[in-house]
Length: 378
Image: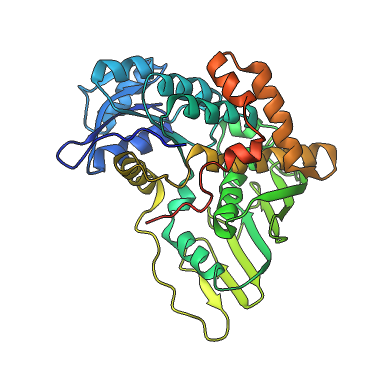
C-alpha cells in the first residue's frame, strides 16, 4: 500500500491542526510551533476553555480553536492532523480525519484496543492517507544506537527491561485496572520490537499490587515474551517502587552469542564484546520532535516512516496479550489475540468500505506485514 504525499517545504510549510489541549497536547503544540517546515493553523478540544488556554501558552492567543478537529482543519485549510486526544477518542478522530483527506500523526496507543486499531489499518487502505503513530522512544538516539549494537551480538538469547518508579499521578491512571501494562509498558514493548526487528509469539504475565500501593489496580507486573527468533524478552516493572528509581526508559540488557549490550535508559549504551566495533550514530531525531520531523518527511517523499499504523499494531497486541495472561494465569498466544480482535473489528465496523477491506485480508499478520517491517530511520 502507498499513501498520498503532500507537498511542503521550508518555504511552504505543512499546515496542521492539533486535536487535544491537555498536558500532552501542550507538549505537541510546543513541538509544532518550534518545528521548521510546519505551521500550526488551529487547536481543537471539546473543552474550548482548555483550547484557548493552550494557544495562549504558546504565544498564539488569536489562533483558531474549535471543538471538532476535522471541521477546524477544513476552516483553516490544514493539510494534516495531529491527534493527541484520549485513547478512547483515537479511533473516531483519526477515522474522521482520514476520510476527510487528512493524514494523521497520532499519540500512542494507536487505539483503545487491537480491534479498533485494525479498523484504522483498514481505513488507511481505503483512503490512501498516512497514519503514523508516535512511539516517542523510537526517536531516542540512544535507543537507535542500542539497536545498532544489538546487531553486532549475533543470535540474541535474552533481552530484559527493568522499570521501577513511584509517580503519584492522581486522576485516571490511579483508578485503572492495569495502569503499568496499559499506560506505560507499551513503550518498552514497542522498543524491543524495534531492537530485535522481529515479532512476538506468546506472552506469560503476572501482575499484582503491593500492599502499600496508592493505585487501585495492579501497579506491578512481570511479563515474558517469546519472540519469533526464539529470543525471550522479560519485562519487570512497578509504578509504586520508591527509591533508586530507573530511567523512564527503563534499564536494558541484551545478551547475545557475541557479548552483551547495556543501557541505563539515560546515558549512551555500552557494548561488551571482544574487539567491539565502532558504532556510528544512527538517528538524527529525538522524542516527539523527531516523530514530527519524520511525519513531515514521509509526506514529502512517500517514504514509509517507522510507526506507520500497519507496523505499530503489534505493540498494542503485546499489551493485550500481557493483560490477558495476567487475568487468566495462562500464556497468551499473539495469534489468538489478533484473531479475536479481527472478528471483533468486523462485527463492530460501521463503515461498509472499511469492513470489506477487513474481510478481504488473507490473515491479520499478512495484512500488517504489507508495510515493510524493516523501516529505516535516517
